Image 1 (cartoon, one colour):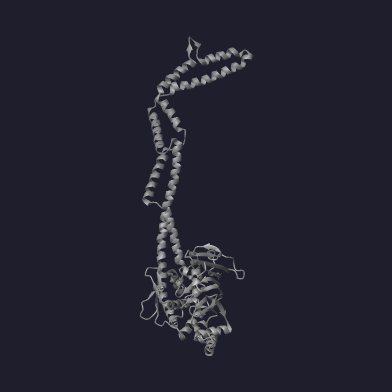
Image 2: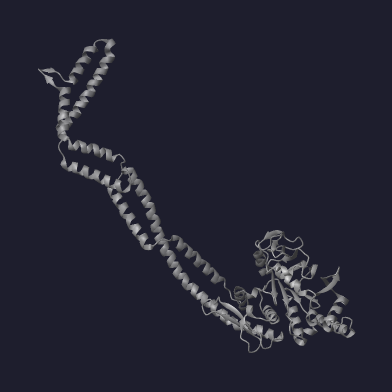
Length: 556
């Protein structure tokens, strides 16, 4: 709630500080004293339109500052920027809003807890802190969303399940969008990857050196006759015999080793010669196998050539050599796994959405039906209040859209009998609108913690004025209420009364605000009743009003 308001150089107000408390506060004073300026100051503080014409002549700027005490209903990290109130309990804190308007027509400036901020931030705070009713536009119930919430609260309509279902649908929709891609394109890509991997897997690529081995084998098979000839010549050199004597290299190495063996000093060389003889004999054996065993094998040659061509084709498509082909296959398997999982998840999410849409439609129908049932009940309850607020011919309609869940909720008011019903924001009369808002707030449970009523008693008097005062006092048991009034019947119901009065100082007119109690309050009420604060009759009437309001007599 608003606990302190400081105004400087705004209109006729040179400087004024008012302290407010819970319950109902009446703001009174003679016409033109500056009562409405305090309401305009609040409107500025809550993000309303700034006009340099409001700046007091001769001043460089007008300034408004308000201190709000926040309880758990409005205190959150985004709203309360200050420290917790040392005097308050857990969940309480303070918020200080400030606004200046330059005299030269420049842009106004705004602060939240001493930090400069856009004016729009004041409006965001103001929507949760204060409602202004009357000729001012800062009224939360003008907002269609606020009207919908008010209807739900009145009808006890639980929209939590619907909100959760909508949140789940948004989540699934976002997931489906993130999975993305054209399903047909994804299917084509899956088929291509499967074909490529099938081609690679069919080749059974295991040895990275297979290509070089195949090249050597092809060369051997294609030159088998020449290989046999060369092997025969080499074998003759190692094992040939001429004229009954050993003339091959193997035998000659043996003879050389035997010649040296009898000399100990040459034994090492003899051993080396025998080793060479053994190696030459082994080579001769392999050459004999080539000469006698290698035959032409055109079938195997064709198979080797076909295998080498397959490897060349795969390399051209997928990567250089067997290593490159295997690397491509590994990457392709990963892509295929991802695409197949996407397809499976897409199908799963689509099925979940189909099932959820059925549940969502049923819940939306239930909420829409409940809203349409609660709408006329709310309208009748408000109309009953309007009758007691001097609006006997007023009609309130609560329109709910045909499309479930009936989110399109609009409050419509016909202030007088025979007039068409209009959206609240289009009601021209400030007094009638303020009384309609008062009636709504008496019926509804949701509201900002502070409410300011200006012109709420315009055009009423007598019993109707008493009913207005009674209604404001009733509302003040649940919310902080500040009412600008010129009727003593209304002001008498207030828990406290502030008086705005003008005085002249230094040849200039200035307004001051002061709290009145006891005898001073009786004098102010007498002035409001008769225009003659010194009238004994008016004073007695004022005393009777205060006594009756305090004892509940006027509440009947």
